[in-house]
Image 1 (tube, rainbow, N blue to C red):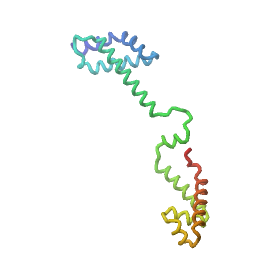
Image 2 (image 1 turned 90 degrees about the vertical axis):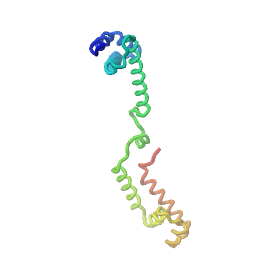
Image 3 (image 1 turned 135 degrees about the vertical axis):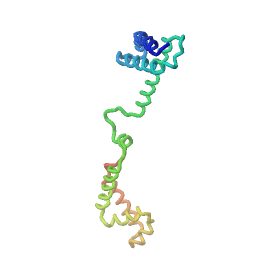
Image 4 (image 1 turned 180 degrees about the vertical axis):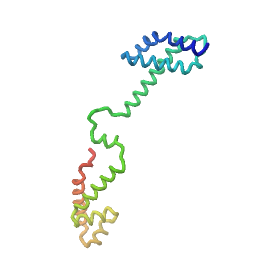
Length: 169
């Protein structure tokens, strides 16, 4: 059998393929797309068809497998994509790709929040942030350890308030 003979035999089956495709889809256009995909695959894989076998059965199998594969692809895609119109801020933080520009803005905000701290809170907080222990900060600044802890605590609260826009719910 030549390629042209095979192609014409496949085209002759297009009406029955359309009826069969309607079993899979409820939409006329989707059914036509499925038929088109089936015919394209049949023509492309012409060499896999064994002469003497049931052409209609072979085409139906191609159509069924094409529909199943497309369905699985759609389900898999939908499981990764959030389609809600109102995406919450927490989902935006997770789904949006971060970039260096965003990190630059965050760091600028942190530096601004730090610069807004008075020196009595800034110094103990920055020393603690650098890894010094409470007693080391106390000795370095020559103040009681309780005062160091209080100042660091107050600095954290002030920083938290300044950076509340970055709070993740």
